[in-house]
Amino acid sequence: MQETELLDIVNEAGEIIGVAGRNKVHGNNSLLHRVVHALVFDAAGNLILQKRATTKDVAPGKWDTSVGGHVDHGETIEVALLREMREELDIAPDKQPELMYSYIHRNSYESELVHTYRYTHTGAIDFNHDEIDEVRGWSLQEIHANLN
Image 1: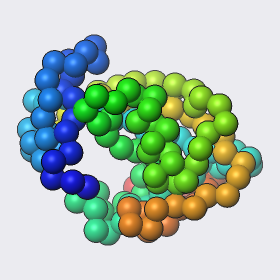
Image 2: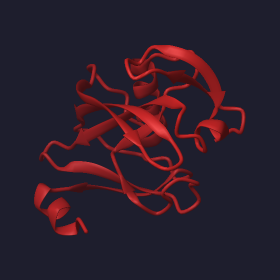
Image 3: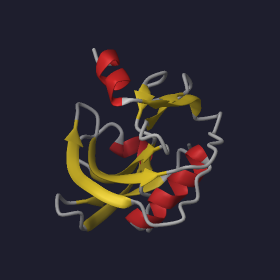
């Protein structure tokens, strides 16, 4: 993570209306910015989840979607998704992941326009050990049993 990471500020329709640094949007929930998530499934239908590194500034040590990250300034959603999949899980999709849904997530410190995609991956996963502590496939039953 760079302090100078720039993100496009968007309106609720996803239209770019400005630019701000990551450190500014992660402290001002009036600045809506774009995020991509990928739900990656293995050949058995298990959902691959990542446990965020304890060194992360947001949600350290927490289980998270397979892939997630910001859409950088000037970057398309599709390019950001492929970049994040490669950076986090070393996956280079052989076909375009399927858009599942988009939604706005707001909390006390940020607002995100989240674009969530689905992808089935049958190969090996070599995750980024700087950003992720653990990766594993979860069945639907395991996910339900571990929700608290």
